[in-house]
Image (cartoon, rainbow, N blue to C red; front, top):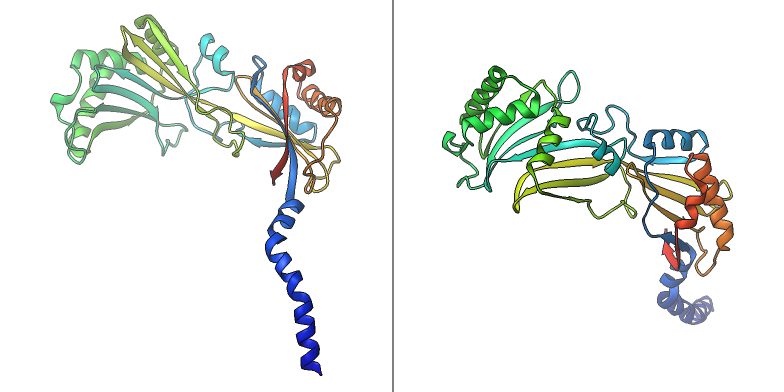
Length: 324
């Protein structure tokens, strides 16, 4: 009798198990799926990146991303170069500078990976891309002319001729014990205003290119990698790679991450901003009145001391499906 009951129960459950097998993943998906609002990127103009983050934190918002304080990310201060500050914001840092001798050879200054006991380390490297064997030392004959090297070392680091000669000799010695290029570490930081003036005066064209934009779908711990290239008669004179920090400011309309809708303001130090709303779990197909979410974003802007009217320049798109 017990065996017959078990068989009957199994036969009754069999259709239910079959239905769960077919539709179970979709039911689970629906439980975790959410509605989603997002905007395109808008340039709202210059902003004080550090101040905006500080005010957001004081207002009680979650803050994620690159904080412009020493030790949180590496780079050289650009100094008083208004063009760079205007284009990339007050928190921009210089990652490396390249000066081209010809199509194959260049002199580069960059932030050393290991740094120094005093803080950020400065590395100088000579490269020749026509060097035939990456596993062999760079030959002195593959270096740019001494006169060019001395001039550019003095320009990059603000050195006199004697100090430039010292570093050129050090590079030539380093080449004997290294492969592919010659690299040394020095104590001086680049004289970026002087270098930038040289690049702009020596070129007849320049081009700036961001990476793929704000890291909207990834955690923005690193920021934007931006390169500015300087050209003369179509040939590259030099280039500068910048670090443009970015961050997210997050809040929840019900004050709770588990039941509230998540409002996100993502921006970088140059003033590029994107907005996003991820609705609560299981909200697939639901919506929020437009004025309601614009009011909340205006409040966030105001508390971060950004212009609340700037929210009106964003166009929002709605998707009824986004898995958390």
